[in-house]
Image 1: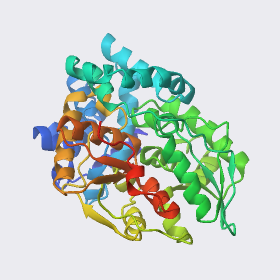
Image 2: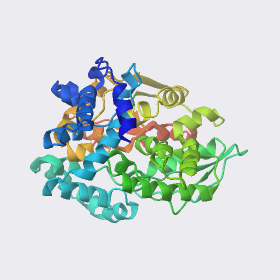
Image 3: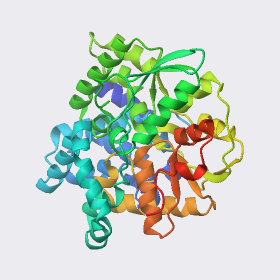
Length: 424
């Protein structure tokens, strides 16, 4: 990889177009906390510089939002560079006891739906007794962040193994259930299956599917990501589907990278590439299919937030807007600084709570400036992060996933019924 990485680094001409798009450069104005600054550090490492604590800190501070990839006129693959660098950091750096414990807890919990499911009764009690409000007032740092991010937990809505199409079948699609999505946002999965079925898709949700490995891949834990990728590929191969539909931006971007992740494994390279070629964000697939289900009016003013791993990593911006614009009565407004990350970024808001909080507050202020009563986005992390920031500012909104808004329109539901995270 060193020769390939050296070539990728050489693509950067240090023009500075990335600077105004980089969240950490906007926060601190430090060159080494910009994409080109981090690329300079990567070059130094290749030339023999030590991987010291200061250098690791600059890499850790990167959100991996990939806004710089969109902005770069030279086509620098910063996404590949930062992920390979993080893998090197994780393979060679010994972190302190507190940080090691935190990261260990995160990766022993969030990629496991059954473990998250076991936490649901405790979290629901925590919310209903008022302990959540009390803890937010008394705790600081990561614990405050975790307490503030827990979404209201309603009744679980398992997705059937097979959901038949409404009317003539147009496609047979597999559906990723996810981990956090499955247990904390079950309404999103239920809505996804209903919308796909209404648009003529037979929806298959393999019961044996596990974590896609997105959190691991984006954090430099490549060995974990490889194991999870192989398991997920096997699950959907057995389902024999035309496409694999994803409703989580971070998961979708990682699944589309499986071909690169497993490129050096002769037994899996072809299978991974074929799998990645089938992966579609749900808005991407619906836009490709075109609508057949009737859209009913949803009178509301909504703001649409671009999830970074949907807009920057996957290049999907127009499709969600086109789908929402086709709903009668729904007025869609753009958010200022739409390309700037909200601070969620996988596990970033847990391991870097202070900058994540500042970015969340910045995003919330921009959302409020639109005058919208509903915020729509396509990623559970963004929903939790922005909801938390809006509540800190004392002006919470209703929030919903893109697919829930489409589902409500197709079903003719009341707009007030789809606020995933309403005022608390």
